[in-house]
Image (cartoon, rainbow, N blue to C red; front, side, top):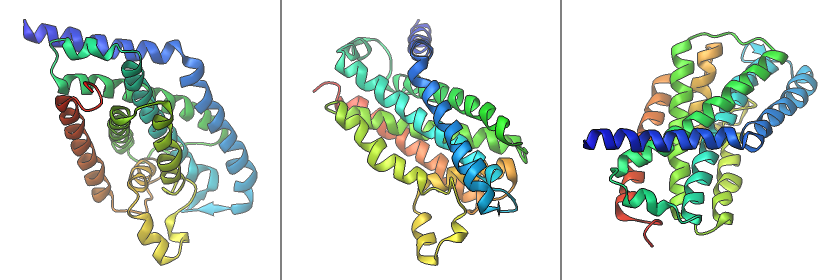
Length: 257
């Protein structure tokens, strides 16, 4: 009986999150598609012709995996932070708190919503990418695992942001002042080998660098970081953030205050 209750509750959260993504598709899918198109036109087609090759590939081919990953990261994060905070703001988070669902299952439910939006937007951006350049897949397993792990990490990070947020300004602070700079400095538009040695050392403290390069390796077979260490970063971050989310839910931080 308890198992059936958990399954129904989990499915309800996931279906609600997925329906929310499709219901407001003008906010969830269209903006990143337009943004990616502009990036490809400006950086890929116009500026890229002047830059030439990078990492043995044309500039537009080199940045394509990074742009896809950037869309996945920002949308996975944005979906969970807005949805969970919306539940708090709308006062229907109490429905989850009184439901006979374990905290870890609630966290996974919201996480699945973030993954769904991240992968959906990533697919749309990939289709747009094919309009501008060809994508060579070096290792499909690495492509899939890197994008899923990255989506998991930032879905959970978005939930932590939503737990502590007191107002709408606080759910936009981290994406604007932390996530965006880390993304732009995470090797999306360049190889860090172009940077001075001191800047390369600083770049290695950026977790997004490992996600972008693992994803790029899956397509092009080139990476600025050790692939094994990149997976260690992604898996370790996912486990730590998941544990933190479950603990915060158990303690009632931001939900029972």
